[in-house]
Image (cartoon, rainbow, N blue to C red; front, top):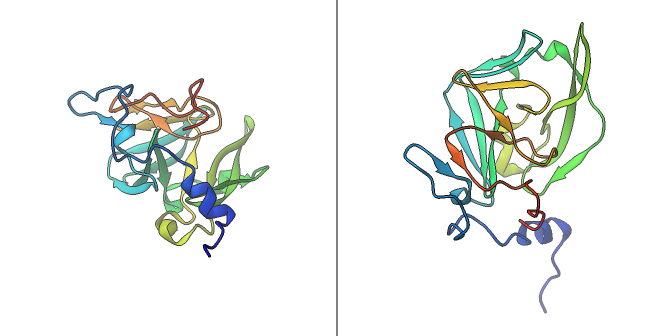
Length: 184
């Protein structure tokens, strides 16, 4: 008799695309580019020494060369910044909750500055699953809400509004979050 899958196992097995082979409709990467369809599932952690900055209204919120990218099939990289390189005094506990089948439960953070508050501008995993303890307490930020840069180049937000991937010129898709991608 086989053991029934628990909710976490079921969520982790639902994905068709796992980075083992690039679908025919994926954009072919050019020189110096990565295809998000070559990223694995489960995701891979990738230390990144490029200069990562997060800014709002000329206030530097985060500044690091110690980011960790999370690379997951179909999504542009999500950059996580060590808390020592974030002005955490500007963050207050945000609203809501979400769960990632790979990383665990997300804690949301709002940015509070003189100009007001930006609700759920970022998130962290305070108690991640064992495979992702390297990003425990690191902060991810939404480029749809803040100005995010990699080596001085402003990134675009991952389509769809929910995901926190950073679209740069060195990644090609199509990306999860675009219309018709709900089953990815």
